[in-house]
Amino acid sequence: MDSDQHSGLTAWKRRQHAARRFSPLDCGCPDPWPCRCSLPPLSDKMIDAGRDAALHVLAVGQVPLLEVEVLQALWRRGGEDRELAELLYTLTDGAIA
Ligand SMILES: [Zn+2]
Image (cartoon, rainbow, N blue to C red; front, side, top):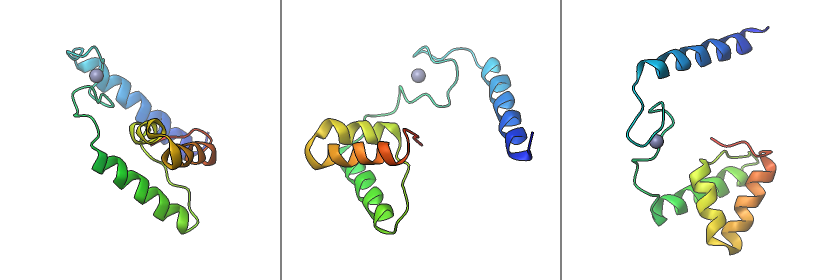
Protein backbone atom coordinates (compact mmCIF):
# COMPACT_ATOMS: atom_id res chain seq x y z
CA MET A 1 0.00 0.00 0.00
CA ASP A 2 1.57 3.32 -1.01
CA SER A 3 1.39 6.39 1.15
CA ASP A 4 -1.42 7.99 -0.92
CA GLN A 5 -3.65 5.00 -0.41
CA HIS A 6 -2.67 4.91 3.21
CA SER A 7 -3.48 8.55 3.82
CA GLY A 8 -6.76 8.14 1.91
CA LEU A 9 -7.68 5.22 4.13
CA THR A 10 -6.64 7.10 7.23
CA ALA A 11 -8.75 10.08 6.20
CA TRP A 12 -11.71 7.81 5.51
CA LYS A 13 -11.40 6.17 8.91
CA ARG A 14 -11.15 9.60 10.53
CA ARG A 15 -14.37 10.69 8.75
CA GLN A 16 -16.15 7.54 9.81
CA HIS A 17 -15.06 8.10 13.37
CA ALA A 18 -16.15 11.75 13.25
CA ALA A 19 -19.51 10.79 11.71
CA ARG A 20 -20.26 8.51 14.64
CA ARG A 21 -19.77 11.39 17.06
CA PHE A 22 -22.58 13.42 15.46
CA SER A 23 -26.20 12.66 16.06
CA PRO A 24 -28.11 12.43 12.78
CA LEU A 25 -29.07 15.79 11.32
CA ASP A 26 -32.66 16.94 10.98
CA CYS A 27 -32.53 16.19 7.26
CA GLY A 28 -31.63 12.57 7.97
CA CYS A 29 -28.01 12.78 6.82
CA PRO A 30 -25.67 11.05 9.29
CA ASP A 31 -22.85 13.53 8.80
CA PRO A 32 -22.78 17.31 8.12
CA TRP A 33 -20.19 16.64 5.43
CA PRO A 34 -21.18 16.48 2.57
CA CYS A 35 -24.79 17.30 3.47
CA ARG A 36 -26.11 20.16 1.36
CA CYS A 37 -29.75 19.80 2.38
CA SER A 38 -29.88 23.13 4.20
CA LEU A 39 -27.92 25.08 1.60
CA PRO A 40 -29.94 27.36 -0.65
CA PRO A 41 -30.40 26.15 -4.23
CA LEU A 42 -27.81 27.30 -6.69
CA SER A 43 -28.54 30.67 -8.22
CA ASP A 44 -28.31 31.22 -11.97
CA LYS A 45 -25.27 33.34 -11.26
CA MET A 46 -23.50 30.46 -9.50
CA ILE A 47 -24.36 28.08 -12.33
CA ASP A 48 -23.12 30.62 -14.89
CA ALA A 49 -19.93 31.02 -12.86
CA GLY A 50 -19.37 27.26 -12.83
CA ARG A 51 -19.93 27.10 -16.59
CA ASP A 52 -17.61 30.04 -17.28
CA ALA A 53 -14.91 28.59 -15.03
CA ALA A 54 -15.24 25.21 -16.73
CA LEU A 55 -14.98 26.80 -20.19
CA HIS A 56 -11.89 28.72 -19.07
CA VAL A 57 -10.22 25.59 -17.71
CA LEU A 58 -11.07 23.69 -20.92
CA ALA A 59 -9.63 26.56 -22.98
CA VAL A 60 -6.24 26.11 -21.33
CA GLY A 61 -6.30 22.38 -22.03
CA GLN A 62 -7.26 21.06 -18.62
CA VAL A 63 -10.35 19.17 -17.55
CA PRO A 64 -12.35 20.90 -14.81
CA LEU A 65 -14.19 19.06 -12.05
CA LEU A 66 -17.50 20.73 -11.30
CA GLU A 67 -19.66 20.09 -8.29
CA VAL A 68 -22.39 17.64 -9.13
CA GLU A 69 -25.08 20.23 -8.37
CA VAL A 70 -23.61 22.60 -10.95
CA LEU A 71 -23.26 19.83 -13.50
CA GLN A 72 -26.87 18.74 -12.95
CA ALA A 73 -28.12 22.33 -13.17
CA LEU A 74 -26.28 22.85 -16.47
CA TRP A 75 -27.71 19.61 -17.81
CA ARG A 76 -31.23 20.62 -16.82
CA ARG A 77 -30.87 23.91 -18.68
CA GLY A 78 -30.56 22.01 -21.96
CA GLY A 79 -29.00 23.31 -25.18
CA GLU A 80 -25.33 24.24 -25.08
CA ASP A 81 -25.23 24.04 -21.29
CA ARG A 82 -26.42 20.43 -21.46
CA GLU A 83 -23.82 19.66 -24.14
CA LEU A 84 -21.13 21.12 -21.88
CA ALA A 85 -22.36 19.10 -18.89
CA GLU A 86 -22.29 15.92 -20.96
CA LEU A 87 -18.84 16.75 -22.31
CA LEU A 88 -17.48 17.37 -18.81
CA TYR A 89 -19.06 14.18 -17.54
CA THR A 90 -17.46 12.23 -20.37
CA LEU A 91 -14.04 13.89 -20.01
CA THR A 92 -13.91 13.22 -16.30
CA ASP A 93 -15.27 9.68 -16.61
CA GLY A 94 -18.10 10.64 -14.29
CA ALA A 95 -15.83 12.05 -11.59
CA ILE A 96 -17.23 15.00 -9.71
CA ALA A 97 -15.91 17.42 -7.12
ZN1 LIG B 1 -28.60 16.40 4.67
